[in-house]
Image (tube, rainbow, N blue to C red; front, top):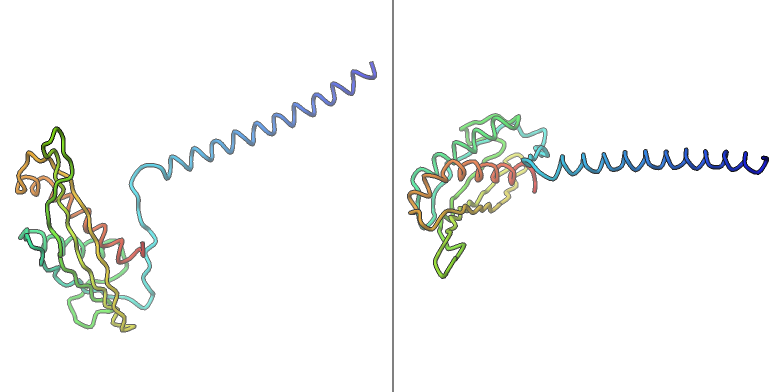
Length: 188
């Protein structure tokens, strides 16, 4: 009997150790799944806005359209969308004064269509590419930084450019204003 008592005691210790290990594995698994679900899907948001404390005002000049093909609605609407995004998502005040802390200039440099997909030796999808060149003038530190932002938008080859623009216009404005904002303020 003396031999069996230590075995039961040892067996209990193994069970407790096993239970503890299983609990640790369960917790680690739950944390891993939580991490995957929180970062693996959904909308990516950039909250790492980096604006020095000394910067209080911003002036966003009209984004000129110098692309080979000009969509006449794009410049004014994109300019307005960028201004709204900066005012609503930063602590900066919009001004029209030339003595703003930051002055942002932009130029639409690309607005072009290319073939993006072929099926059965026929064009199946086209790609509208929009590119903007940005110049951020930090008047407090007398420093100028330049950025290029580009995004492509797919549409059916059966659609005309005019029809595609009408259907994609809100997506173009949202996507380009998000990319411009993130490029200027999130350092990505």
